[in-house]
Length: 216
Image (cartoon, rainbow, N blue to C red):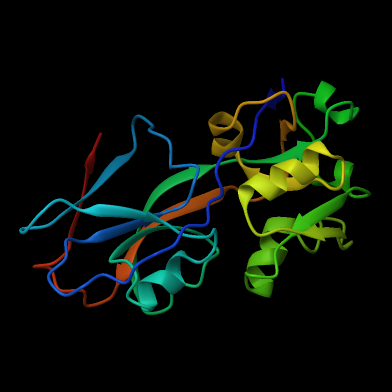
């Protein structure tokens, strides 16, 4: 059955450029990648001191790496990872966010074609390829989404869904992370899952950042 969620703080955050000699900075977007069993646990270590964490806008993780704002990033595909090294860490299904009172939340799951007439939110801050992937453009039947309002962060996105301004597509972890009466989230059955990788700049000095993966 559908899961209801609530807004939280925006995924956007001010990022200070690391200074020489600083501990590694790990980038991640909210909601944080949830823990899971039977897959891989990821950690970043430094020989000098503990690592710090910064939040960046969804879809901007690779850019933050290339600009030197962070040393390691949890990036969500299809982010452009050209020139970066990456290790897959997590895969999760996508869901559609619908306002309270909508008929579809009564169902356990829906097709993306079931919401073809609903306006879908998008962002001007991401690449066209990123926007199209999240909006499932084109749809399985070759049709295009009905484009709705733009938004820049999770808080605004959830408010727009709650106000019935538009629908949105999001990872399942968002439905588990946020909690409020609306919007309501329903799993999508016919779209690609979201894949998360741990990325860093190719050739990063291993004395600064050493990325290890191990079985949980």
